[in-house]
Structures are given as C-alpha cells and as structure tokens.
Image (cartoon, rainbow, N blue to C red; front, side, top):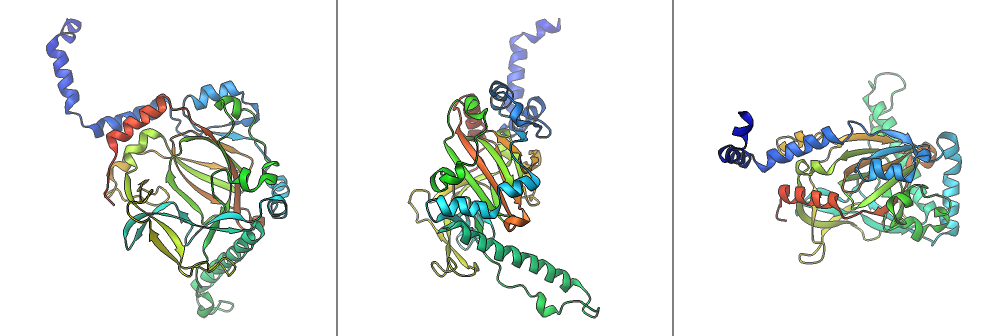
Length: 389
C-alpha cells in the first residue's frame, strides 16, 4: 500500500514542492556535510611516500581529490641541516644562478591578501624587488636578531623594574618593525632563476606518471614565520615538499566554498614610500598602497574574506560556522599532496640556522578540467557573493 501511494502523481508533486521550499543555502550546507561524511577524511593521513605506486596514488588521492601527507620524501634533522645549509644554498644560487632573484616584500608578511585601506577593502599584492640570496639572508639575519631582541626586551619590560637585573623600560621600546622579505615569486622561479639548485632537488618519482605530464612549474619558497599565505585555491595539482622547518596548512574542500565569503574588491600593490629605499638599507620600510587604475586589467579581484588563522567574526560571516577546516603540519622531509581547487592558508616555522626561515619546494601539475571542475563551478555559481569595489 505504501509503495502504491509513493508512486502517485500527488505524492511526487508533494515531494517536489517540499524540495522547492528548501533554500539554496540549505542544499549547499547538506552538500558540504555529505561530502565530509562520504569522502573527506576527518584528518589528513600520512603514508610512506617512496612506497606508493603511481596507480595507487592516482586512484586513492588524485581521482578522489583527497589530500595526503607523504612521509620520508627527504632528509630531516641534522641531515637536512647539512644538505640545505645557508652556505650551500647561497653557493648554488648566487654562484651558479642568474644573478639577483625576485623577492616579495610586505610590511607585515601578508601579501596577496585583503587589507583595509583609505580606499576601502582592497586586495594588495607585495612589492617585488631583486637581490642576491646572500643579501636576502642578511635581511633575515637582522630581522631574526631584532625579533629575538624585541622578545627579550618585552619580557624584561614585564618585570618589576624594582627587582635587581630587570632592564630599564627605555631599553624595551621597540624600533621600527622591519619589512618582511619572502622568496615566493612563482612562475617556476626555481627552474628559471635557480637552475643549479633545481638540479639538487628530485621530483617525486610517482608524480609525473600519476598526473600524466611534467610539472607546469617548480617553485622555491624561503621565508620567515612572519610570512603567511592567505586563504586561496589553485587550478593545479600540488606536491609541496618541506626541506627545512615546517609548514602549517589550513585546508577546506571545494564544497566549503559557500562558507568562505569570496567577494570582488579593488586591487592594489604595496609600494615603498621612498621609492627604492631599503633595497640596500636596513630593511625598515614604510609602504603606501597604490590602487590599480580603474579599468586596467586586474583592477578588481575576487578573494576570500575570512582568515582562518584568526578568530572569525561569525556575526559578519555567519555561514562560516558550517565550514570544517583541516589543519595539517608538514615537517622536514615530508610532502603534502594538495588537490586542485582545495582552499588553503599556509603559515610556517623556520630553522634557527637559516635565520628563522622555512625552506620548501613545490611542483604544480595541470589539473584535469573534468567532473571536479564542473561540480565546483556549479557550487561557485550558486553561492557567489559579489561586492562592488
């Protein structure tokens, strides 16, 4: 009897009517929930990288669009410190490279991020300058030393000055905060600007066969803990190997896009207030934010509003409560497979003998524009929030 009633036109119309009353928001929340239940892990697993076969990697992770940490992909500890020492890096890059390399500079380590400016909220790119790797490390050494000294002074300042051995309060007054220099210029900076160093780094054996192509770009990343990559996605399959220090990735699957509040804002760029001041100075710069002229290519940019590295304002971003970030730490000698279209924020912790810098390399492989892409574009179209610049 129940089966007969289920198939009647009136029952079908009732079901259609009930479905129609559900909001798009409800359906997107359900989609994200079912995605997590069915195929997104509650934590990112770690496997033995050298042991995995290309077909297994393709089947279990690439085709399923699931992240995984690949262990034992390189040296760690004292061995990593010897192989990737500052002296060896400088010799390989400055001695056999193309000369000066591109370095991204910001006042606070947050480039390619939304900033509040006199022009309103704006997507701001870092300033790019050229210098040798030796000069880059000189900057990091001064900044790292200054940061340590400032921390010591701050601790002393908290002491009761009447106690013997406490620093005078004048000594704890901080100076100008140095700019943050980050070797993070992409477009295959490792192969284009540091070919001798690239010869020392081996592409993961399984990757090329699994992805069906050579990498589209190979990038080197070298910078201090102050340098943070804001939340974004890439149209690439990404293998990210940490050589020194460690990286912390905060990940969101594509189905969480509706809860991250992408909006279109005006674009701008950090520019040193005194032109090229600081390139050969002490690294202490003041920046202006210069908007891209209206109508030029790239004068607006869609970007994510929330920062999962801070406490998210749920009154401003109420749908974020439905997001379920995955946080994974990638240590020396480990690599993260970061699937295409996954949103990620990246912070880092450096090695003391690299002047507090973290060193990593990543390989970008072209993604397949198949079902995952069309599925994401549907989610994007249903949930996009446009904000006029």
